[in-house]
Amino acid sequence: MVPELLISITGVSLGALFLHRIILMRLPVSYDDSSSRDESTQASDHTLVVCVHDGAELLHKQLPEWLDQRSATAEILLIDDGSQDGSAELIHRLASKHAQVRALLHPVQRGKKAALREGLASVQSDYILLTDVDCAPASTDWSRHMRQRCQPDGIVLGYSPIRAASGWVSRLARYENLLTAVQYLSAAHRGRAYMGVGRNLLYHESVRAYFPQDDDLSGDDDLLVQAAADAGAPISTCTDPAAWTWTDGPVSFGEYYRQRRRQISVSGSYGFRQKAFLMSHSLAVAIFYLAMIGLLLTGQVWWMVGSICAKALIDYLLLCRSRPLSIDKDLWWWLIILDPLLLGFHICVGASLLVQKTTVWK
View (cartoon, rainbow, N blue to C red):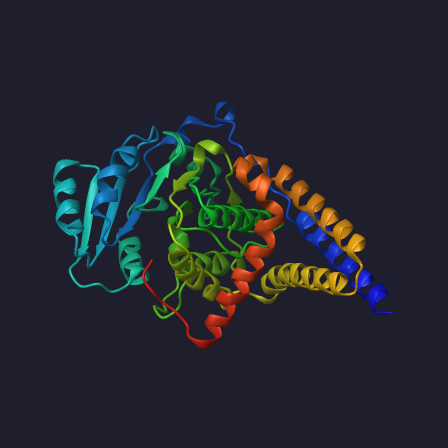
């Protein structure tokens, strides 16, 4: 009786994973065809906004790439939030040297959300492009592609992959980043947008009205996208490789753990549909692996092996459908291990959030 029940549970969980990963998590095709676009969309009508906290070294590296965009921005607004590494002095010098750069300096750290809110209020251009100080555009056409995808009074959700590095921290972070991107981009494609990443996000200036006012809540990008979606703002996606922004991943499990605490804590603000979508996916994965343990303990080894192979097939089909988002070779080889590792990691992070919330500046 028990083995039959476990086999049935395994079948149901596999069916749920197939529904999520193959049917619901379908990436939109949103490559730009610049030849068919009006050249007026390349006008200097957007501002690049970057918040900085102790990022002087990164500013030296990234600013030339921001200035080198083919679609020239109206300005690059650099907001320093109480840095202690000389970032404020550097930003002041850059603003004096480059007419395109404007500085907004906060001598006392107030938090990213407060700093960003003040910066957004000072923007005069029609469109606002966001990224982080540690992000590098994939090409000189980054801002142009993002701008071309934006509808009037709308938002464009971009993609920001993590650079490959050796080690399990990098593999796990890259795999999770890919899975998260497929989830939020496919949800937006279905008209159920629930999040965006501030590393690569563009919106019309009217969307500023939806920026969250509560500084105690993390996840200003997610909250803004949700509020705008609820108000009926058109939300587009851009997965063109030329419009990506590359970033470095965590270098240790401790750093990765702190990042995930901040990001997962935001999920409490999601609506019922978004929570149901994400939780049902995680629940299906958890039930599947619990059933695998049960099959192993009851001696149903071949059923366990067959079920793991069936799930691997579903996972590899997902990766094949996600090829436009770039998949490093090592993720293909280690996928069977990465998925249960990610589940265990999320369980640990989720349990820690039940004990203590976090609102650290990112």
